[in-house]
Amino acid sequence: MFEFFASPDAWVALLTLTFLEIVLGIDNIVFISIVANKLPQNQRKRATNIGLLLAMVQRIILLFAVSFLIGLKNPFYYIDSPWLTTGISGQALILFFGGLFLLYKSTSEIHEKVELPSHDKDELDAKKITSFSNAIVQIVLIDFIFSIDSILTAVGMTNGIGDSPMDALLVMIIAVVISIIIMMVFANPIRVFINKHPSMQLLALSFLILIGFMLIAEAAHLSHTKIFDQEIGAIPKGYLYFAIAFSLLIEFLNMKLRKKEDALESK
Image (cartoon, rainbow, N blue to C red; front, side, top):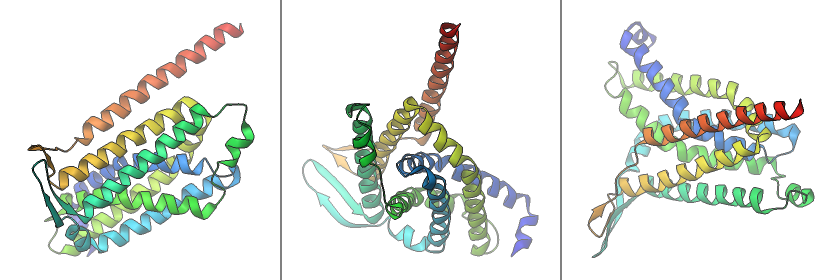
């Protein structure tokens, strides 16, 4: 089986897929950071690491059940009315309800941070997730939603690689393991950074709102949904990641400017 890695194509596929898994895992890290930061201080790092380990196990299991995931793309119910045409599939439902969950989670968090008086510390602490298991369940559920898209993308990228289907499966499993290990290295520093800077918390929550809308749009696109004969297209992920990167760049410049102003005022 491992003789397959003597081929340069195998290494190119592995590196490309690992990079793709890391990029697609950015939104997962943001969500894990938001959830873990609501736990008591001594549980946050453990929740982040356990959440990512369970995500890795879950994705490997999904890779072995890839035929089931592909079957979820097939519509099981059709709606054909004068103004709405769509074919509902299992994959579309998962993405749709996952997007709704992200919208609810993000807007409720933003409401808590913006509307709740800053001096009312007791009320803010009372709203924290006190159950470690509750946080882990949320992390695993949202990772399952994100995994659907990344696993199917991985299957498409490795299709035809090697002489045996096990070659492609091995490449995907190794890519998932490497990407999760890399995310575990950076997830906790990112979580601490987000928790330390309130503006970054709001920016991260805004990213989750964007991702929630993207998941809903993706669900409609996969269902070939037409509203008044206008088909809903997919939102290119490159645009989304560019918007996130550009927003982060502006926020880092703002943080640097604020530090410079504070330093001048302290003199």
